[in-house]
Amino acid sequence: MDATFVEGGHLPTDAAKTETFTAKAAGPVRKRAVLLNPPGTKKYFRDYFCTLVSKASYYYHPVDLIYLSGVLDKAGYFLDCVDAIAEGLSKEETLKRVEAFKPELVVYLIASPSYEEDVPFLTELKTRMPETTFVGSGDVYREIRAHALELHPFCDAVLTDFSTPDFPNWLARTEDAVFDNLIYRGKDGQVKEGAEKHGHGFYAMPVPRWDLWPIDKYIFPFSEQRMWATVLSDFGCPFSCTFCPMSTTGYKLRDIDTVIDELRLLRSLGIHEVFFRDQTFGVNRVRTQELLRRIKAEFPELRWTCWSRVDLVNEEFLNAVKDAGCHTIMFGIESANEEILKKYKKNTKRSQMMEALTITRRLGLKSVGTFVIGLPGESEASIKDTIEFATVLPLDYASFNIATPRFGSTFRRLMREQGALDTTRMTFDSSQSKPAWLEEAEDDILPNEVIFRLQSMAIKRFYLRPGFLLRRLLTLKTPYQAWAHVREAFDLLRSR
Image 1 (cartoon, rainbow, N blue to C red):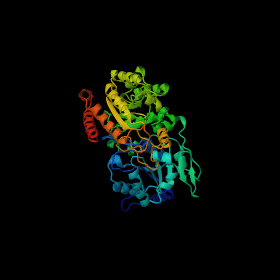
Image 2 (image 1 turned 60 degrees about the vertical axis):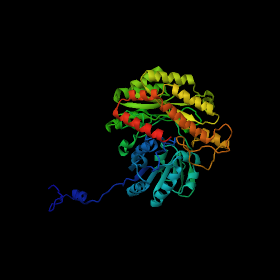
Image 3 (image 1 turned 90 degrees about the vertical axis):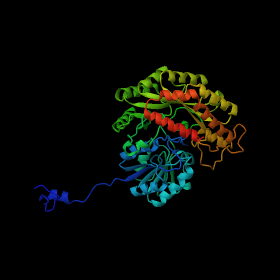
């Protein structure tokens, strides 16, 4: 007789079947984890060790946490992915949501620009969940390392690289030991401090749980479509620009099969726009050709943006990326002063900038140039020359950032050695007007107020040209692009 759950139904007489019907829930209980980008009063970028504040409405995915969602899912964790900034959650709303999930593990981001807000928020969260393990990652922790455990009582462990197997290995440990890229206090109270090792060659990561993230809440100013995703096809950077923290994170290539798997998942979620957030797309030409071939063959509808360098691209490369769906390339121009570029190991030339950007425009690709204003050794005249050079270059967009001693960068170490920094200060930001240098800094550093004035001048000089505005209007392809550009322009100019 078949068993039913209606009133008056009968259990089967077979003993084995009866045992199944009457058994209580069995099996291992999945551990619960929260991946947390904390709330903030500004649009803070805390991820991938390159921290700043959005100058307008744009806001990117926290790639550290995105990829850790795949790692923790594979490790058997039940996840809640909380991006409080993207979702517009208040401090109290975030606290209640995380607390209600009852996680055994919280992995959080902490960053220099948001530091003064992050610390009290995380302190309060830990107070509410004292038994939960808190693991932190961010630019500040790369520098202060084991001191984080003393400085921040809410921090149980520090993670210095999300792309290696070290974190899941640490979670699965049966006894305390030293793990690379992990710093934590063992059961004996002693700090176990693993070295920061990023590896080289190739690496593979599980496909992220994109379905758990609020994908529709992120804004990319160069996207042609409303829905988009950030994808890494490598980790770190092979170049040595001293002002960039990514120059100290090593360089390795992600297994192409896992990149393709991720693109397949994104397509299943209705996403056909990607920002390849590789620091320099296309360094390894052979591997890049294979990646482009597979993208073109399997994702003909995919549209995307990437970073590259003016001394790396040529017409053949640019044609290849365009043929595979690329529509915008971002270049780090930094300065028009070649002596400054050499001093800070960028080592590019004005002629290379003009040639690369001219080809980019001729082929119908859009370009973005990023600039650094106020590097020690620059004069007001040299910065004005850079501003004028930016208006001459065939650029579609430009971003002007303040030279900042970012945590983890060689530049920060050198400035600290020169006595130009307050080493007790944690809050720095390259995108907003926050003074970076001590008043008694050396003579080759411009005063903070001069740097801020030149940044504002650069933005207005570049974006308020009549010819530039007309070209922008004529090259918009979708209603979303038009709406996004108007919003970004308004927010950018209002911030000045």
